[in-house]
Each structure stands twice: as C-alpha cells, then as structure tokens.
Image (cartoon, rainbow, N blue to C red):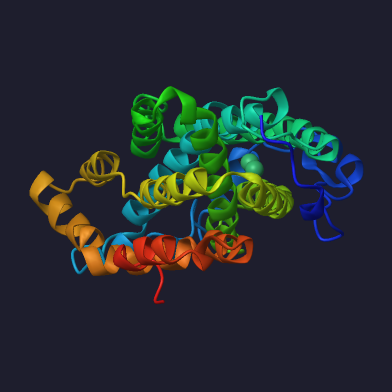
Length: 323
Ligand SMILES: [Fe+2]
Ligand SMILES: [Fe+2]
C-alpha cells in the first residue's frame, strides 16, 4: 500500500458532508414520501405532470408534439417510475458498493479517518434515497395499474458488465471511479427535475434528494482529488481510460425501456424507433454527455487529470474536451 502524501491534505480538503446530523434528509425528514389523497392528486394532475416534460427530449419529436394530454401524462409517469427504479438500484448496487471501497479498504492508498466517517454517512443517505424512491415508484405504478422493477435499467447492466471486464487488481479503483462519476453527474440530473410543474410530493422527494446530493458531489470531488494526487502514474493512466468509459455508460439512453414506454401508450414499434433515433445520433449524444458530465470533467481538471498530455488526448479524441 502506497503511503498517502500528507502534502495533499490541506485546508481545501475537509471530507465532510457538512452539517449532516441536522441537514441530511434521513436525519430530519421523516416519512413524507406519500402521494396526496386521490381527490387532491386528481386536482394536481389537471395542471401538473409526474416528471418535467422539459427533461424528456423525445417529447419534442413531431410524432409527439400534438398528443393528448393524458398520453403525455402517462409518458411522464412511466419516465418517473423508470427514473426512481433506476435510482433505487443505483444507490444500493452501484453507489454504496463504491462507497464500501472507501470504508472497508481495497484501494492502494490509505483512507483518511474523516473521509471514512463521511463515507459512512453517505452510505446511510443512499439507503434512505433508495427507500423513498422505491415507495414513490410503487405508488405511481399502483395508480396506473402497471408493473415496475421488472427489468434491470440498461445503465445498471452496463456498469456491472464494465466491472466484470476490469482485472481483479483494478476492481477497487474502478468502483471508486464509478462512485465519483455517478455522484458528480447525478446532482446535475436532479437539478433539472426540480420545478413546480410536477406533482408536489414527487417534487419534494426530488428536492430533498438534490440537497443531499449537492453534499455528496462535493465530497466525491474531494475524494477523487485526494486519490488522484496519491496514486502512481501508471494507475492514473489506467484511471483516465476507465473514467472515459464510465462517463459514456452514465449517458446511455435506455432504448429497450423507452420503446416499451412509448408502445404502452399506443405507438407502434416502428414509431417508437423513429422517436428514439435522434437521441442516439452521435454528435447530439456527445453534446448531451458534455453538458451532463460538466461537473465531473471540472473535478477531473481540478485534480490535474488533463495536465497529462495522454489523458488530454484521450478525452479530446472522445469529444469530451476541446483541448
Ligand atoms: Fe442518492
Ligand atoms: Fe449520493
């Protein structure tokens, strides 16, 4: 195990989740993850959606622009259930699995005590996020009489396949990097879903989740900075390659799920394919990734990843940075 470099632990790295005991929603928001009574919900649904249409770019497709409001609302319900089911699995099987490597070791360098304590708090937060995501998804699925959690979200499958493909001696590093990307990208995703055009109880849990994630994002950016400064050069080169692959996985469109969602509201498979196709267009996808992963790329830059010309070239060729 390489000893950590004490020079990298300076005043800018504090490894905390802020005032966790008073601010984290698992500590101070209890059980407010229930939909309102049916009459109140019906009233809300006259002017609100389950998920912000602005965060569903496929609704801009000409085949969808003039659709009936009830179909659009059902598509937003499908999108919310999918997003929450994905979140539930992500928190347990991906993020907390990554956090375990910080808490229980396996990495090639020492973990500062403050980092380990904050990681234990973060692990607790994610368990609660999984709980309220599951509970809301279940209620919305019941409201529409649909099954949920039937298939694994595509990104989860790809992340687990990715981990399988990494050599055993680098798996702990790969898990750490997955946590870093996930936690710096997700805050951005949630930021976009916090608007008042969605059902109030959904808005509340997304808002609370976002507030916790802002702390997680800061924490993981610091963790990444610390590890980057302390790992060997050959590990840095490998880490940069892994990071590029992970960022691409976190930007994947779940085509099988989206096809199913569209077909459940009456679109044919051919129409669903036509609606999804523009999202898969490479330049559009790269642009989407650059926007979504901007905080991740910024944290990498701050840590010095792109000071190395090979890393810079690698990300430039992938279209993720300009220089
Ligand atoms: Fe979370
Ligand atoms: Fe998180």
